[in-house]
Image (tube, rainbow, N blue to C red):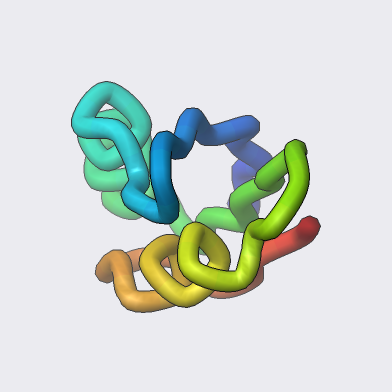
Length: 58
């Protein structure tokens, strides 16, 4: 199963509630994350480094 999660970020960092959601969903399968906003390069890099994240969409 693949899950798509809209995650929260602030100043290039992924917020803890989003990290918790990713960790829980990763137990079920691949996780694709969606980031919205401007200047997403740091947040996208941070999201890609989280265990269980298979794809980052911006």
